[in-house]
Image 1 (cartoon, rainbow, N blue to C red):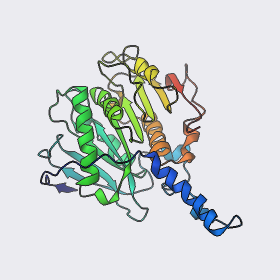
Image 2 (cartoon, one colour; image 1 turned 180 degrees about the vertical axis):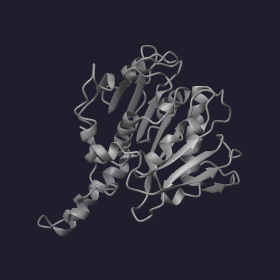
Image 3 (tube, rainbow, N blue to C red; image 1 turned 180 degrees about the horizontal axis):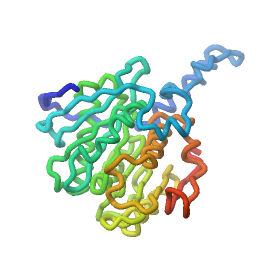
Length: 310
């Protein structure tokens, strides 16, 4: 594990262009190539493939495994860094697959990054650079957590020791409880994000119709802190109907279900991140059609805008 010292303050960079532009550019390259070489030109599978795909074809076993196909390492970020409370970066050790999408994860009220640590190696080994952060204060409210997620995204891309392996146009955010509320807040403010995953989110704001980021909300049936009727469900229902969204409700689970290793959360989080951060349609099979709900399943409720990307 390496440790990063806080860098000297730098002027903030302008926002990057909307994330979907990179996907359009990749697809446009194929059209341009055909135009240059004529209608009879032959394009190899490598030329036509999604450049962001990482790893072998996914299976149920691969998306539910505790580790993916990549070895990972960590880098510690000092609490003296500006804008948030430091944290830990989990990243693949393999630099031969090109750059990776970045995912920043915030904890909930009174919690630290350790409550989110189980996501680190699990997501990174699937082909992401994952940054679990501490907040400036354990009592920071959701909007403050959103601003800190925003600062951590910029730090990851512009100043971290692993910035060379992070694609700044393919970023995502996750967060638990007030960190989940912060996830929605930063997604509303930063529409170029590729994916957002609020985990049993808490926020006094319930309407998020201005969010333009594909959003998976994970609620818990027996949540006594941020009940799904008061938080997750109205938040989900407020999202624009044209947006790629899903609402997953864990049967019999409490507010703190996202704080411990959970195969269902991992499976759907990995699939959501792969589908929207990496534009990897191979993972659509784990999202659409939606899973069954009811007795004998993991879900007390599940809602989705399947198919995605249509």
